[in-house]
Length: 374
Ligand SMILES: C[S@@+](CC[C@H](N)C(=O)[O-])C[C@H]1O[C@@H](n2cnc3c(N)ncnc32)[C@H](O)[C@@H]1O
Image (cartoon, rainbow, N blue to C red; front, side, top):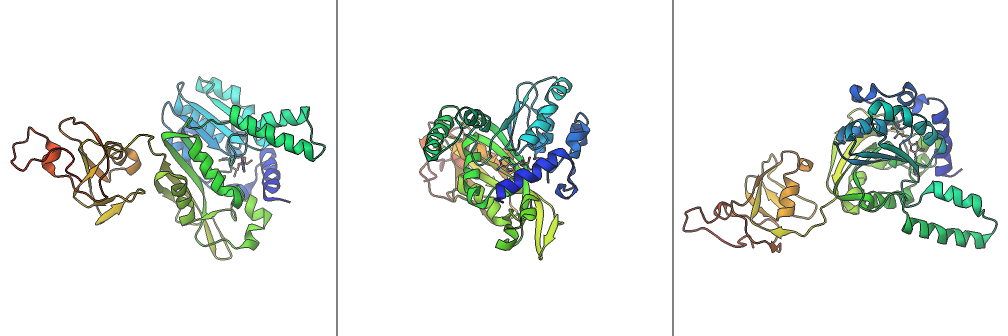
């Protein structure tokens, strides 16, 4: 049996009856669970709580939505202006999640949740449309396969299941590890594609502390049980950096492993990341001060920030470094006067004199003007 077939079978069983060995204890926000039907709470196969990152008005995409628990929790937070889309490839899980759509819409006061059929490593392909197409045009020979490929390409292009740059927040709870290793890079690229510029990612999953040997990866139970498909702890973050995300970080880290197999620890973590704004880096005289406690830090573009020093930054990076993605690490210093921006061409690690930020009102003979950072 392939990895995917094993995962399909296991989660069809999980939709039918609660599977104790797939449940990892999670401390959810109890106030969001109150409205949920008991069946959805019981058939919870998550390992973290990415709903904590949802904001009012967000368009949220939940990868591998299962019984719909995270979607229905998120739906209470996004409100009427927001929307939640759950993607799953398993018909039984989709049926279970959809069973409560009407009831939950009434309780929440808004029909803001939708469950769609797709594979999370190929978020363009609408598997419901594919099912309908295969009914009309079944596969009998190799020529049919060639036609099917052409149909799929057209469908992906003309009516993608999830459009480019359409999601404010991508969440997932214990699913990325289930995707075949050879598809994992494409999976993270797909997450990047569908996230809006400036959009966020909050993914709870399992990581390993050592490489997972082949014989464990081949074990169907360990794979479909969210264990042996786990990426190693540094690989998980690096995969998001490689796809183009920034501010990639472990926000949650369970010190106690969930499982230990042959001495390898498998633990639950939650990572957060941001897709960069699609705007040029324009220098308008902004600076930031890195508070410490380290002597210096580097961002993913290679810029260095020295502890306590006024570092020159472009307006785009100023907004990012002083946003919640970086917590409280940076003090922002906006220029006192609006000045005409110039395209950023400064080296990493350039200081911005205080007089420059204060502008022409500041009476000082050594006052700088223009782009003195370079
Ligand atoms: C461990 S369960 C987690 C379910 C849910 N996120 C939760 O918190 O309870 C994994 C879910 O992901 C789905 N899944 C696994 N691999 C998938 C893939 N490649 N594409 C879409 N769904 C997938 C399974 O069908 C199952 O519903």
